[in-house]
Image (cartoon, rainbow, N blue to C red; front, side, top):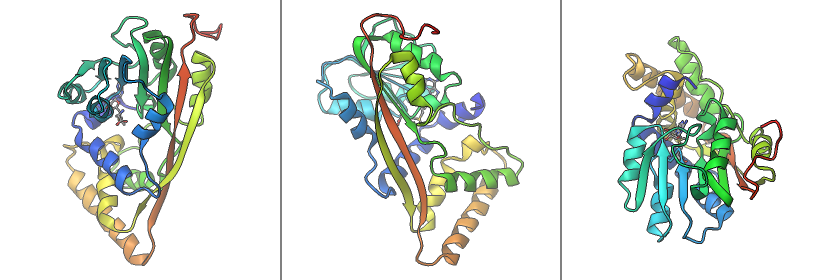
Length: 274
Ligand SMILES: C[S@@+](CC[C@H](N)C(=O)[O-])C[C@H]1O[C@@H](n2cnc3c(N)ncnc32)[C@H](O)[C@@H]1O
């Protein structure tokens, strides 16, 4: 992903919030990645935990509110997200990148990287950092989307951006097809929990809101001079679709995996090629 777009996308927590809220309210089946990560981790509440690419820190806020006693660290490349983490009582926000984590070896009992690894240009370098900073016997949990998740909405946004000469978003660097092998290379045994679902919209407004929250990935940045025109065109297109498909819903398949690995006690990676 072009780093300018990535920084612009996460400079303000609002589009991320819109996307998370949309998944929460417009999914075919209950969509709760936080609950899935908690199931995978089975925390005691005493672990020192780092959430890498913490976003608006809602995972850490959830842990703090249920009385987690261990240290809670939220790390992100976006100053706005670091500020969001620091605003949560008992959470420490830290600026840093997943491929160069500003913590010593063996700092954490648990490390999570939820819906962020696909933004990192070299995901294996990040996975090695996850391993380095997690204590032997500690757990690393990584969440990534299925390849081509919600393809219809993605195509809709890409097509409207392309109309105004904006190129499509760069491919994500890792997805649920490729993560298991990368994690095995770094950690050895990996456990996978899979969630298959779909976004379902039966009116234009929430779909338009969700599409707009993807704009920056396609070069339609917040201050792009044609942003409002592109949004108006897209809205017209979506309203036409509902008018021409009476009684139908806009259904867009999506999903993710939670991949969990325990850091072995040897202190070195399992692969000789590492
Ligand atoms: C899709 S959001 C996910 C946020 C949160 N983990 C969640 O699931 O709600 C991706 C987050 O990763 C952050 N990010 C992107 N590249 C990063 C990197 N190299 N290191 C750390 N954080 C990064 C972004 O700033 C953003 O907050």
